[in-house]
Length: 150
Image (cartoon, rainbow, N blue to C red):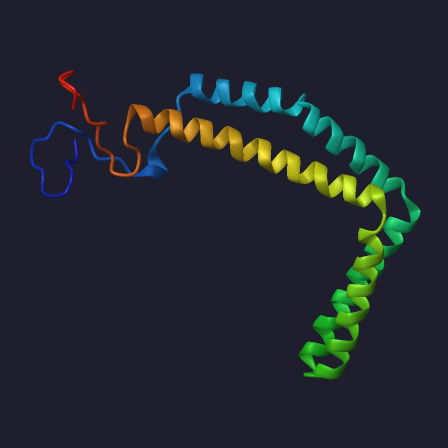
Protein backbone atom coordinates (compact mmCIF):
# COMPACT_ATOMS: atom_id res chain seq x y z
CA UNK A 1 0.00 0.00 0.00
CA UNK A 2 1.43 3.37 -1.03
CA UNK A 3 1.54 5.92 1.79
CA UNK A 4 0.81 9.63 1.80
CA UNK A 5 3.66 12.08 1.35
CA UNK A 6 5.61 12.60 4.60
CA UNK A 7 3.60 9.89 6.42
CA UNK A 8 5.26 6.53 6.58
CA UNK A 9 2.66 4.62 8.53
CA UNK A 10 -0.59 6.56 8.83
CA UNK A 11 -2.64 3.57 7.69
CA UNK A 12 -4.55 5.55 5.07
CA UNK A 13 -3.94 4.36 1.52
CA UNK A 14 -3.03 6.95 -1.09
CA UNK A 15 -5.41 7.10 -4.07
CA UNK A 16 -5.25 8.88 -7.36
CA UNK A 17 -8.75 10.23 -8.07
CA UNK A 18 -8.54 8.86 -11.61
CA UNK A 19 -8.24 5.36 -10.18
CA UNK A 20 -11.19 5.54 -7.80
CA UNK A 21 -14.14 3.36 -8.64
CA UNK A 22 -17.47 4.80 -7.63
CA UNK A 23 -19.52 2.40 -5.58
CA UNK A 24 -22.43 0.83 -7.41
CA UNK A 25 -24.95 1.88 -4.77
CA UNK A 26 -23.89 5.52 -5.11
CA UNK A 27 -24.17 5.36 -8.89
CA UNK A 28 -27.59 3.72 -8.60
CA UNK A 29 -28.83 6.51 -6.33
CA UNK A 30 -27.34 9.15 -8.65
CA UNK A 31 -29.24 7.63 -11.58
CA UNK A 32 -32.43 7.51 -9.51
CA UNK A 33 -31.97 11.18 -8.66
CA UNK A 34 -31.39 11.99 -12.33
CA UNK A 35 -34.61 10.13 -13.23
CA UNK A 36 -36.49 12.03 -10.54
CA UNK A 37 -35.16 15.35 -11.80
CA UNK A 38 -36.11 14.29 -15.32
CA UNK A 39 -39.74 14.03 -14.23
CA UNK A 40 -39.73 17.41 -12.45
CA UNK A 41 -42.02 20.23 -13.51
CA UNK A 42 -38.97 22.29 -14.50
CA UNK A 43 -37.75 19.67 -16.96
CA UNK A 44 -41.25 19.11 -18.34
CA UNK A 45 -41.64 22.86 -18.94
CA UNK A 46 -38.25 22.96 -20.66
CA UNK A 47 -39.09 20.03 -22.94
CA UNK A 48 -42.44 21.57 -23.85
CA UNK A 49 -40.84 24.95 -24.65
CA UNK A 50 -38.05 23.25 -26.61
CA UNK A 51 -40.55 21.43 -28.85
CA UNK A 52 -42.49 24.63 -29.47
CA UNK A 53 -39.27 26.50 -30.30
CA UNK A 54 -38.26 23.80 -32.80
CA UNK A 55 -41.63 24.15 -34.56
CA UNK A 56 -41.71 27.96 -34.50
CA UNK A 57 -40.78 29.06 -38.01
CA UNK A 58 -39.76 32.65 -37.19
CA UNK A 59 -37.61 31.55 -34.25
CA UNK A 60 -35.82 28.98 -36.40
CA UNK A 61 -35.29 31.55 -39.17
CA UNK A 62 -33.77 34.02 -36.70
CA UNK A 63 -31.52 31.35 -35.14
CA UNK A 64 -30.28 30.29 -38.58
CA UNK A 65 -29.61 33.91 -39.56
CA UNK A 66 -27.65 34.52 -36.35
CA UNK A 67 -25.55 31.38 -36.90
CA UNK A 68 -24.83 32.43 -40.49
CA UNK A 69 -23.78 35.91 -39.37
CA UNK A 70 -21.52 34.41 -36.67
CA UNK A 71 -19.73 32.42 -39.39
CA UNK A 72 -19.40 35.60 -41.45
CA UNK A 73 -17.76 37.33 -38.48
CA UNK A 74 -15.18 34.55 -38.22
CA UNK A 75 -14.38 34.93 -41.92
CA UNK A 76 -14.04 38.72 -41.73
CA UNK A 77 -11.91 38.45 -38.58
CA UNK A 78 -9.61 36.13 -40.51
CA UNK A 79 -9.23 38.83 -43.18
CA UNK A 80 -8.87 41.46 -40.42
CA UNK A 81 -11.81 43.46 -41.77
CA UNK A 82 -12.92 45.12 -38.53
CA UNK A 83 -15.48 47.39 -40.22
CA UNK A 84 -17.42 44.39 -41.56
CA UNK A 85 -17.09 42.58 -38.23
CA UNK A 86 -18.69 45.54 -36.43
CA UNK A 87 -21.44 45.83 -39.06
CA UNK A 88 -22.31 42.14 -38.74
CA UNK A 89 -22.17 42.32 -34.93
CA UNK A 90 -24.81 45.09 -35.07
CA UNK A 91 -26.93 42.93 -37.39
CA UNK A 92 -26.64 40.01 -34.96
CA UNK A 93 -27.71 42.30 -32.09
CA UNK A 94 -30.81 43.32 -34.06
CA UNK A 95 -31.67 39.69 -34.83
CA UNK A 96 -31.08 38.74 -31.19
CA UNK A 97 -33.29 41.61 -30.00
CA UNK A 98 -36.08 40.43 -32.29
CA UNK A 99 -35.63 36.87 -31.05
CA UNK A 100 -35.75 38.04 -27.43
CA UNK A 101 -39.08 39.81 -28.07
CA UNK A 102 -40.81 36.51 -28.86
CA UNK A 103 -42.61 35.35 -25.67
CA UNK A 104 -41.89 31.69 -26.40
CA UNK A 105 -38.15 32.41 -26.42
CA UNK A 106 -38.44 34.15 -23.06
CA UNK A 107 -40.33 31.15 -21.67
CA UNK A 108 -37.66 28.79 -23.03
CA UNK A 109 -34.85 30.85 -21.49
CA UNK A 110 -36.71 30.95 -18.17
CA UNK A 111 -37.15 27.17 -18.24
CA UNK A 112 -33.40 26.77 -18.84
CA UNK A 113 -32.71 29.05 -15.91
CA UNK A 114 -35.13 27.08 -13.70
CA UNK A 115 -33.41 23.78 -14.53
CA UNK A 116 -29.98 25.29 -13.84
CA UNK A 117 -31.23 26.58 -10.49
CA UNK A 118 -32.68 23.17 -9.61
CA UNK A 119 -29.41 21.41 -10.50
CA UNK A 120 -27.32 23.94 -8.56
CA UNK A 121 -29.62 23.49 -5.57
CA UNK A 122 -29.25 19.69 -5.70
CA UNK A 123 -25.46 19.96 -5.99
CA UNK A 124 -25.39 22.39 -3.05
CA UNK A 125 -27.46 20.08 -0.87
CA UNK A 126 -25.20 17.13 -1.70
CA UNK A 127 -22.04 19.18 -1.13
CA UNK A 128 -23.29 20.61 2.17
CA UNK A 129 -24.48 17.22 3.41
CA UNK A 130 -21.15 15.59 2.60
CA UNK A 131 -19.25 18.55 4.05
CA UNK A 132 -21.15 18.20 7.31
CA UNK A 133 -19.84 14.63 7.58
CA UNK A 134 -16.29 15.30 6.44
CA UNK A 135 -14.54 18.55 5.75
CA UNK A 136 -14.18 17.92 2.01
CA UNK A 137 -11.84 20.81 1.30
CA UNK A 138 -9.15 19.94 3.83
CA UNK A 139 -9.84 16.23 3.92
CA UNK A 140 -10.08 16.30 7.70
CA UNK A 141 -12.83 15.11 9.98
CA UNK A 142 -15.18 17.81 11.30
CA UNK A 143 -14.32 19.14 14.72
CA UNK A 144 -15.83 16.99 17.44
CA UNK A 145 -17.31 18.80 20.41
CA UNK A 146 -16.73 17.42 23.86
CA UNK A 147 -20.24 18.53 24.78
CA UNK A 148 -19.07 21.12 27.31
CA UNK A 149 -20.34 24.24 25.51
CA UNK A 150 -17.52 24.54 23.03
